[in-house]
Image (tube, rainbow, N blue to C red; front, side, top):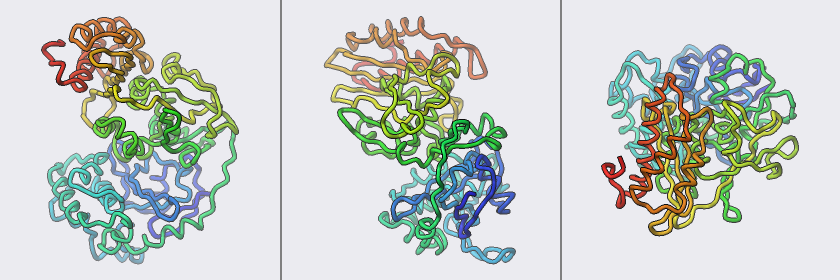
Length: 479
């Protein structure tokens, strides 16, 4: 039994734990505003707001309901487009629009309307965020929503109008403010207390159950199988959450989602360009769902977070049974987790409970790049990351990764070893490229030919040094 609040109504659902929330919303609760689009988290037509109780407040994040399992919905507040206005008796209609909907109308930001509810829900989420909202952040909130017929400029103008109205938002109590200014109905003020009374589900570890974090790739690869699978949900396990510093190490729980990495002041302090780099990873709704550990064990050769953490020379902790989440288990370098295509040095019972890497020092330089058909919300053709420890003109230590150039996420071991001890001069970079070419083995597929991928990785490698040391390198000197 899954118990949650859907808009203003309590729901107790007997749907199988692997059922996608989208199907419950449409076919059991009969709310048609949430649309069926791609069923892969790409189009955003099924976007909902998911409210999670954090102490005495509810934190809202946008998510795609086509990838959100009912197992991860228990005890949450789910908001569809219908829940953003005062709900009248069934069939009576809604007499007014909220400010987001009105801005979409005023700017002519909708045509066929299939995608519109998702845009409205994503943009309305800004009113519930404790962060100050600028036009840029309002537009970013909709980076998981695709429109095929309206044209994005009118939608951007609507976002700008909404951002202007949110300029005076109370960041200490955004829900109270959003209610007072009509962005959400009055029932939102009572949600925190109502969620407190929903009993926590007792989790029974079933060795045969499918371990589920965010599910953002599982539901793309095998939606039907997940529907009937026994599921052990981990998305809300507090032992698998959090980012902390300890003994010169940065330790991140395996259940931490990509959006939490983006929000982390500690990580952004270590890596000044991390925000721009993580914005290349999927979209806001998917970053709010996809976990660090899930990205690792999915074992995609082009996993963005995997490339980043391999280049950070990260170590993971693998635990089983009662050892889950308590810091005990065996340790393994992330780069050594991958034995072959989708083959891991991990038993089925083990999960990745944490990942850790050395805290960056004064001489640390880090950079991540990817190439994809679209700049945002797209899978990489090739990606790459590098971490350098620099002492003056000399590279003391190097760790580089390349994705899409081998059967596994690739740690460029020979290239990294070659760079250690080298001077920061163009000759070193050109020679490192030659070493790199000898240790990669790209194949031709739908994302490009092998030669094209070699060229991309070379260009990304150049980009690392051009971005990290603009005063030292020019492209014409490297190429």
